[in-house]
Image (cartoon, rainbow, N blue to C red; front, top):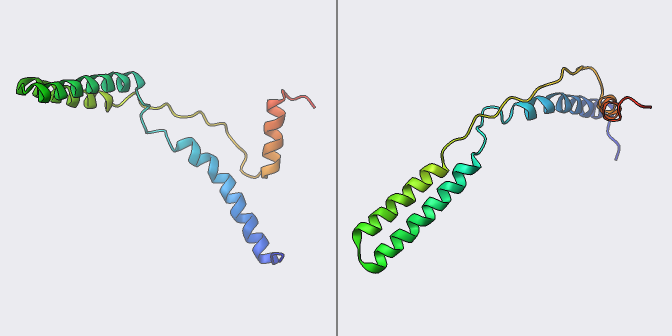
Length: 118
């Protein structure tokens, strides 16, 4: 069943708004979030696993101090792994013309990618 003229205009307007705001949303979505520090995560997991081993060794040998040290190591490992990384840098935005259609933008991107060759 085809859309009425009013429904088609409404759909076209919604599509234009979606494409116009989509780039703005994606470029600013992760600006404030810090990057994960993979080195700290790996180090924290290793420390936590060593602490778990110490905790288990302390329980198996009935040595309370070894279990407490293992628990403290586990806690420190989690703190090291959860340490925030450097903040993400904002994405460089290219100025866009707001009046261009989706197909014109795609053609422009294709031309830029192709080096301007026709």
